[in-house]
Image (tube, rainbow, N blue to C red):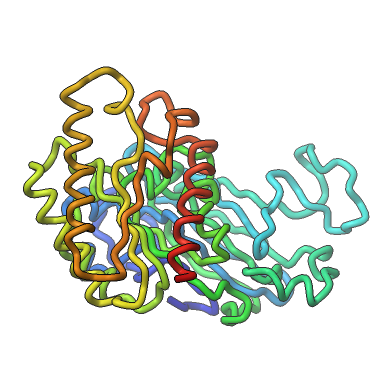
Length: 370
């Protein structure tokens, strides 16, 4: 969506009348789905859709602009790190000198220049942003060949457990939304659990879906839902009704193991796949079985059998589907080892996320090329 000359990427609504009891700031609360969809989801997913996983505020500035944001605490998290990218170029953690020839003192607090990483808490924080001078020197042919043009400022918000909800308070200065030729040609939509939403990597660009999108030169739409990916009909209908994606993954769903019976999982997963696939017969939809996790490696035979039963159910749903755009990816092949997981043996850390991103991207590229 566009507002104030900004493209709010992976945002479907800005809410100024949020009902959260901790929300005392003014400004507009950022949501990944419309309110009409959010309120039809399970209770936990309703909160997750207010976490800005995969959300970016994008614009092309003319001169210096000031963007003001704040955090609304959720689950004990009351601040988060906002990172700045210029197209595909990652901003530094410290300070960037105003003069690109002056590289002295970059690592020290108090260095002369502009910060490109901000800690945003409950009190509104103003980010001062302008295109770094060095980037204006990139040869046009090089810049135009990138999926994201370097003149596009991408304000990457902290999702999952790296921040709370985020409020937008406004922008001062001359900005415009990116043009289509300044953004990727492809769009990749991902639905799944906290693994998709991106719980454990250190930053948003390290989630496996972000890593896959980068390798595909695609723009990411992240609809991961931590602990609450229950294949809700409202989410299936929302994905089906969208016309802004070229390929999708549905990671279905470790959240449902132990919460739903196998029969209920089968029914809900089949309904979601059918709803999305029927609405998008020309777009590949890759259904991903449970990733390698604790049940596979800890010697609990009952847990291992249950996990495999859920994998078998998804395999059968895909095999029985008459829809040619429905495909299966084996989660244990996308993540073939527990190496790189966090100690809970469920959530991938940075290294495992990168491995998954590479593997998922390879499979999706093949499907897009068919």
